[in-house]
Amino acid sequence: MNPEFAYLSEIDTGKGNLIKGLQLVQEREGYVSDDAIRAVAEHFSMADVEVEGVLTFYAQFKRTQPGKYKISACDGTACHIKGASLIQEWLNTALGIKDGETTPDGLFSISTVACLGCCSLAPVMAVNGRVFGKLDRKSLLKIINDYKKQG
Ligand code: FES
Image (cartoon, rainbow, N blue to C red; front, side):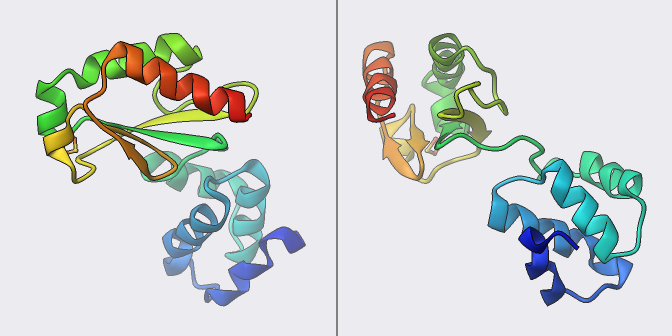
């Protein structure tokens, strides 16, 4: 077993716990890498391809490493009405990536989420949990540039 994933031993090796195991990996690593798939398969005495099959079935699992700055673009009802699709478009253009992707330098990733719980500030996005509201193109680009400068 790859020592990096030794924490899998917290979970019983019964195949019924496979989802639990994958959830634990995602919680610890932020995504499920190829190495993690091999470790999980070994832990549950399954073939790698079986684990991959389960992963592709459940949208909750991420296969790519999230960026240092995880952008959650809200597409809940209030934000949707206030132009969430424009926010997504501006992000895509500014960063050169789409929803679910990570920039090649590993700095940013984008994921669309449902309501972030601050609808009165719509349209909203969060970066590593910090919420930015009443976004327009100018404020959004400034936020991205500020994070870029931090590197
Ligand atoms: S819908 Fe976006 S914060 Fe609620």
